[in-house]
Length: 289
Image (tube, rainbow, N blue to C red; front, side, top):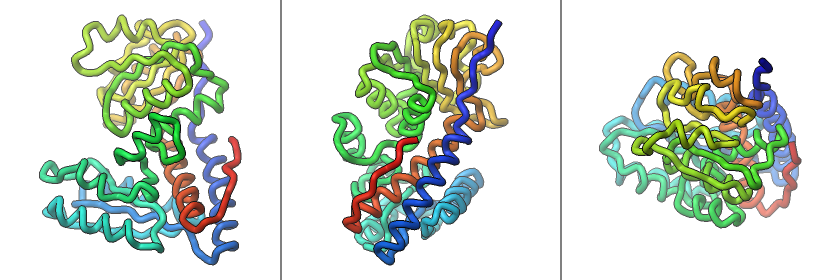
């Protein structure tokens, strides 16, 4: 039996970041201003600290300045909102990333909405969701945007295909479905209360697993020849798809790690340079990759 071909997010992300670094250098030379990404972290959750540090390091390697704001775990929603509004008003900051999840006492939506839409390079605001949904210029949520780039890189045209998105989070599942819908896929959202999830998945030409439950999607439920995008990441480098069984049925599949994850960061960096170019009034053409 032929196994699925792996969708190498690491290699594609490397090419996107290299192109982004060239654009950042060009922008810096033309304007005298280096694109700047501000990262905001509330508390000291070890995983979040690691993620933010990794994003800072990748930013610097791409020629993007990094400003880090670390707030105590006891920070209130009002204090966080004030910090984000200050960064939004700072002309030397071009993109803002608020690391999530935050403490349960924080109104996450209020915090996200304090980010100016033109600096929402993580695609988490109402404005970004609306532009994604209506196909207007703006910023996409980074993980769904990275997924679409992977599909394009592997010549997967969603038009006319049945796509099942397992998960309905505001920054992953919902926008992933909207981006697929915009490309003329027939989209079904599944979630924790979906009756007979297996039956829904078996109909899918494209499966996007984004629910945060290890090995939820079994290979026996994958339609032969389907494209499987595993956007889940669970402890022990385990995705939401049972990779060993799914690889026997799918035509294309993303590994965990090395699939969707690198594309998320690459999209974040690319959108930061896009934001800087717009704010500095410099037109740049994004190279197709």
